[in-house]
Image (tube, helix red, strand yellow):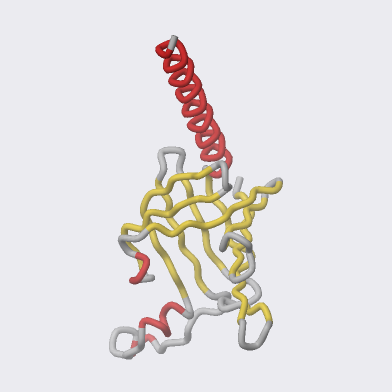
Length: 163
């Protein structure tokens, strides 16, 4: 009698695992593609206002492949002005560079139950992210991707699907 319950429980567990895997694959298929960055905002808790660190019209693309590779690149709407003759001699901090552009790459997985994409960062310009997992809430509405912190209270990125 106990073995019947064990077999039934195992069957239910396997069914649930297959269902969860299918949900993750469906979410991955919806996310897969190239998305153009149209808004990048962060919340400034001191000033109590939303800021646009890369300007009102940032540039960039977030690409997610069906095989699980992610590549994120973005920059300010107005590039830094550096004279051509000082391009390699002008010293600047990483913060200065990151105020103008960012990029990282790696792989990603999806937690479809909580609508979270986890970027497994392998390299890029945001040094503290390298070798870490960066979970981000995401919502897809039509051709728009909203991605940010779990409640969208501290940061939000809005992207539009490229055809």
